[in-house]
Image: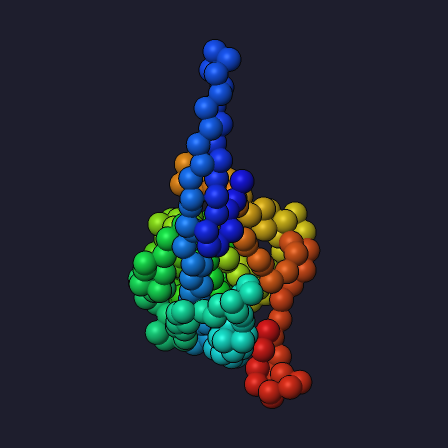
Length: 236
C-alpha cells in the first residue's frame, strides 16, 4: 500500500507458534518533485524532410501549462522545466537532456517527457525523429526502446506524451504520402504501450511507473494548422 507524503505510522504484526509480536514505526515520505523536458522539432537539418510549423509552439504551450500546474494541498509547482527546440533537439541532446533534466530524481518524484515532431516506422521498428535524422539510415532517430532505456534510468514515475503523426509512426520523409492500414496503426500504438508497460520482459520498471499518452488512436491521423484560434500561432 502506498504511503502519502509526510509522516505516517506503520504497524507490523507477526504471529509465530501462537505468539504475536507487534511493532510500530514512523515513516517520513519525502516531498514529490516535478520536472519536465519538452522537445519540439519543427526544423529538420536534412533539406528533403518536410519541416513542421507546430512543434516549437507546442512546446511553448506545454511549458505554459506546466507553469500553471499546482499539485496537492501544498500547491507544489514544477521545480525544473526544460525545453529543446528545432535545431537544438538532436538525438544526443535529447538523450542527454533526459539525464540532466531528471538528475536527482528519487522514487517519490514525477518526471514528464513531451515530444512533438515527426515519427517514423521501418521494418516494424518505430522512431521519434530528432532534427538531425538521416535519409540513409536510422542512426540518428530515437526508437521506442532507446527512449524507454533512457527514461528507465530515472527513478520515480514517468509521464510520457508523444505528439507525433500517427502517434509517432509512418512519416514519408519527403517521399510522398503513404497509405497506412488501420491494422498497422493499431500495431504501432500497441508497440508504444507495450514498451513502457511490460516490466517483466526487461526487469527494469514496474507497470505503474509509466503513464503514456499518444496524440491519437491507431485509426486516426494528426495534422497541424497555421493559426491557433486563440494565440494565432501554428499548432497541431
